[in-house]
Image (cartoon, rainbow, N blue to C red):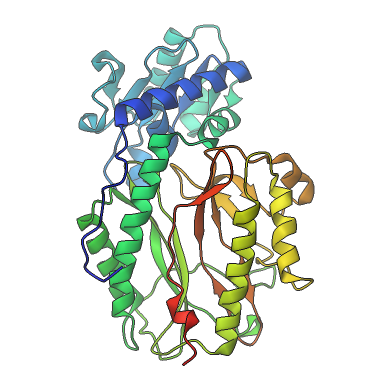
Length: 402
C-alpha cells in the first residue's frame, strides 16, 4: 500500500449487537458443557468477550487496578458487568446489570463481588479466570478454572469477529506501509513507533496491544543476547539506539479494532537490499507457510501442520526457534489458543483439531547462524473448506536481484 494512502473499508462491516449475542450464546453453551453455573471473568479480554465492554487504553498497572469484571450465568440471562468506564458498556446490556468498578486488591470490594456472585448463583459451580489475593480469600468454597470454558467458546470466530480481525489487519498493514517508508540509517525504533501509532489511530485502530518491536538481530547466536536455552532471543524492548546500515530488523506489533487483534511481523534490512542468503531465507519461510496454509482445513490436526512444515525444510532444523512455535491463535488476545508446535510436543499437537472460524498466526523462523534469520507473520482463518489469509504481506524487497 502506498504510504499515506486512504484505507479502503468497503468490506463487510461487523454488527456489534449480533456479535455480542452470538458470543454470549457460545459462552453459555460452553458453560453448560462443562457444568459451570457462573463464570466470573477478570481478564480484560475475557470480560470484553463476554459483555462487549470497552475500556480506554492505559498502562498495565492501571489496567489491572481498574479492570472490568463480568459475571455470566448458564441460565442465559444478561451478564453483570462492573466497570470504571460505564460509557464503554454496550447499549444492549441491561442498565441494572452495569455496576461501578471494583478494587479487587482490597478486601471489602472482593467480599462485595463474592456476595454478588452468591446472590446470582447461591449453590452452583463457579469458575474464575484470574485472581487477586483478597478475592481468593473471600470465597469460602471451591472454585473452578474458567480457562477451558471461555477458551472453547473463543476458538471459533463468528463472521462478525472475522470482519473485525480483517479490519484490524488492514489498518495495521496500512500504518506499517508509512513506517517502512521512514526506515533508514540513523532512524530510531522509537521514531517508528511514534509514526505507527499516529497513523494507526488515524485509520481507526481502537487499541495498541503489543508495544511495537523493531529488534536488531545478531548475525549469530553466540553474538548474543540469547535466552537461557542458548537460543536467539526475541523480542526485546524498543530502544532509542539509531539503526545502522545493514541492520537486520525483526518487526512485530499488534493493533486492535473493536476488541479484536491484528498481528504484523516481518524482516527488514536497513539501508540496503537483501543479499542472496536473505532472499533464500525469505523463500524458505514462504514455502513453509504456503505449504501449511494449503494443508489447513477442518479436521486437520496441529500435528499434521508441523509435519508439513518440517517436510518443507527437508531434514534441516525445525523451522521455528526451540522456545517459539509454528503458530498461535488470535482473537480478543494477541496470542491465544490454539497453539501449534509448542514445547508441549507432538502428542499435544495431535489433540488440537482445526475447526471453521479458528484463526492462526503462522510465524516460523528461518535461521542460518552467521547470517541471522528471517521471520514474518501470516494471519490465516480456517474456512469450511480450507483457509483464508487475513494478512497480505509485501515480500517485494526479497524478490529483487539487485
